[in-house]
Length: 97
Image (tube, rainbow, N blue to C red; front, top):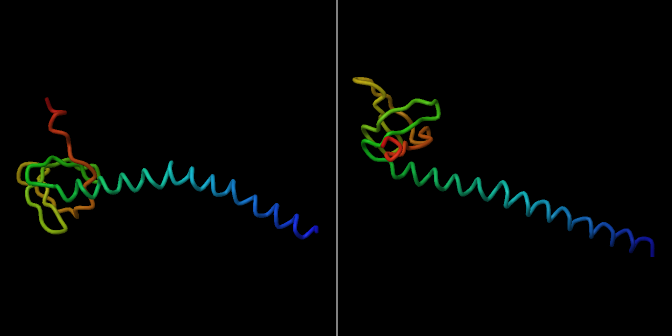
């Protein structure tokens, strides 16, 4: 009989663990996946004349879009080629108004 009580108590200790994992999933994992999908969509939609910010904090305008890279104009006559993954965000055109 004592062995049955020990197994019963061990089985019920998994319930709080499952609840904590569920909370962790909805508060951390799911929002991270959503943000990653939005980032991928933004990178795929990059086009010429989009104003962007890179992971290094460099602001510029997209001049050329290639398969895996983009060429960004950061000043008159200064162009830098970045991996598409280095683009963090596009500046909102409405923010200028």
